[in-house]
Image 1 (tube, rainbow, N blue to C red):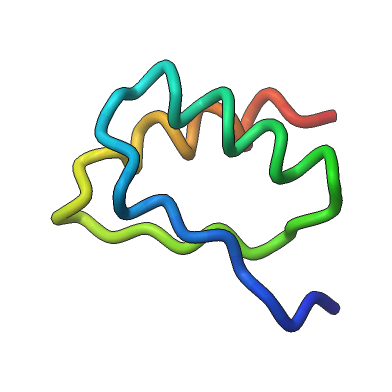
Image 2 (cartoon, rainbow, N blue to C red):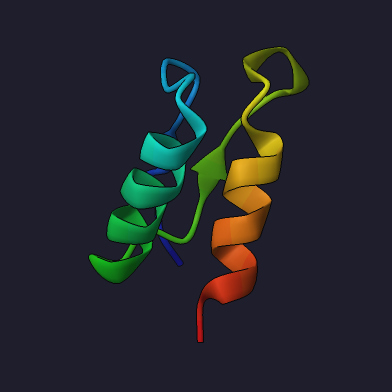
Length: 52
């Protein structure tokens, strides 16, 4: 279980958000921290759905 999460609150560009979340997952992050106010939840969700 990871003890460190990856925060995406400062990433407003949705394509960049998908790219960095994908990279974070590739290197082992399993906790992605986002919030409704960030307005990037859809990009995070789309990226997670693509993970095999």
